[in-house]
Image (cartoon, rainbow, N blue to C red; front, side):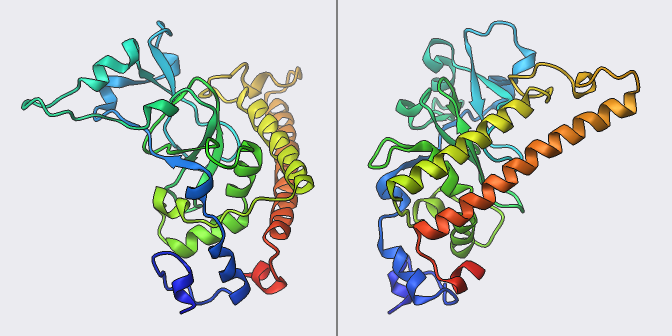
Length: 275
């Protein structure tokens, strides 16, 4: 009877009864919109890296998942969406059957959270800026239902408790949209929400700034080799790495505080936190 508290009755026997009760609260699917996006059926034809194209009018930034990376980044690709995606929408096989799947078009170009759900490190969640289209591999979450704070939402998904719950549902390296939809989502008190949101904003700004030194990111500005003005090339590299490590350490500290705050939101016992 306790196992039946969690939807679809997964055999999650190791969590406490108190933690199990959290699964009776609203889940992600009740409060947020979590969905897959465009499937072109021919990426070689319809996608490019952003540095490969000149005519930017028909090419739209395309969130396609990518490597494990939290908070910001992985916006390397662009998709041909000329005439509202006419070529993609009319991409058919020899029998006239549509091959592409332009799903959830009403959410294209909206601000949201995109994520990479496949990999040994688990899922990682990043800001999806306005004006982008998202993929199936870069499925996305939108605050268009009951809960509106995108920064707290991103903090929760990047937290240890979110990863733990998803791993309980699905211990494989390929997490599904349905796994994320079933996560119990507890709305925080106002002060908690504001504190956690500010930490998320700080992490996003730090990662966004570091992306200016990454040649594959759309906001790339200069190579790390030009970070300092010293004539010694080795010292230039060390100067940048020290600077990058300093900022990434701040991100890790912020994440540790976020984890602690979200444990409080979920009112977890010490034994559950240890798990």
